[in-house]
Structures are given as C-alpha cells and as structure tokens.
Length: 97
Image 1 (cartoon, rainbow, N blue to C red):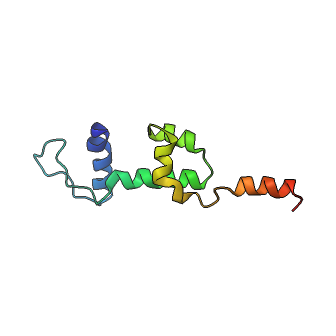
Image 2: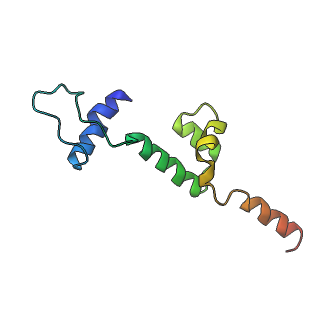
Image 3: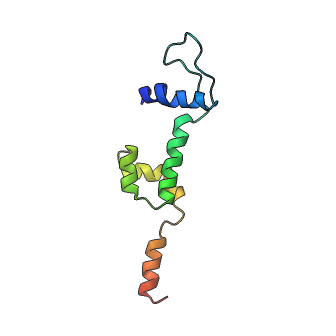
C-alpha cells in the first residue's frame, strides 16, 4: 500500500493539481499531505457505489480485504437504500399483491 500511495496515488494527485509537485531534491516518498481522507475517501466511495449497484456484501468484503462481511456492513450499510426490497417483492408476489 505504501509503495502504491507514494509512487502512484500521490503522483496522480500532483498531476491533477490537488497537491503540489514533489519539491526538487526531495526523497521519492516526500510529498505534501493529501486532502483529509485522501485515498480512504476514494475507497469508501467505491464500496458505497458497489453496494448501491446491488453487489453482494460478501463479495465486496473480499474485494476490500475486510475480515468479514460484518466489517463491510458496519461501515457501509447506510448505502444500501434498497436493502430488503427483493425480499418484500418476493413476499408481495406470494401474497398476490
């Protein structure tokens, strides 16, 4: 993660003008701080979008490297506005509604 952050993420932020370019003579890992949240905000956005799109919590937990789907749900359950809609639809169909 640190290698990716140093050589890819921070470079991309500098190229986008979000942080200043690395100072001349600076070590490869010496970048300005990213905005609050940094990469974590991007990761959270990705997880939220996947859940809103209906991706399985079990699959998403595996993709994110969480120890269990419970961890994923504890952070992202509020991004599942349609949670329960499939079950309600099935029951409504059985009851003839």
